[in-house]
Image (cartoon, rainbow, N blue to C red; front, side, top):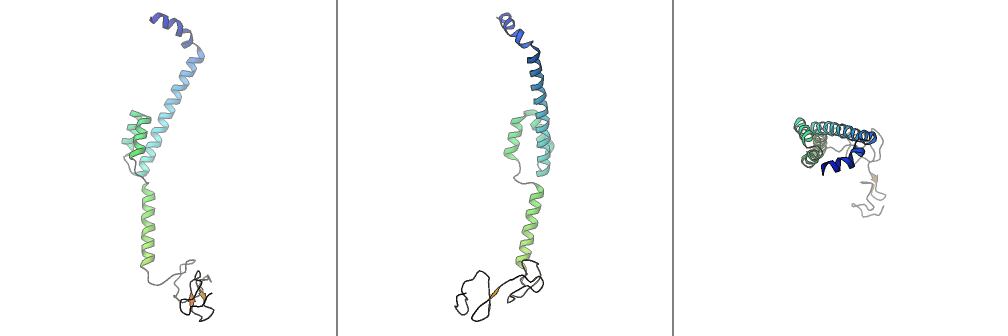
Length: 148
């Protein structure tokens, strides 16, 4: 049985084109594995997730190890987490301020200012009847009930 199979497949497997194709497939597999290991190591390093361990898992289990890493990896990178924390702290500090600030130049303004004295940005509009400052999107004055 083995001799029949080798007689039939021998000429095909010994063909130079088939041998070249086999070598190219092995080369692609090796380059793909190295690239997958490098990407996994770099991504795990950015996310603080034991890069050497995950690179070893991908070396041993190839695409299956990479798929496992993709399922269990941290959802955000360390840099993204730090940036989110800083943004939360900045918003909390902004909310903790009692004095309002201009949204354009962040200079302090009073509640009844119609424009920012520093950058001339329009902050509020004046009521056409009573002259009190109103928010720009208000269509009626809450003080005198006049439609704007």
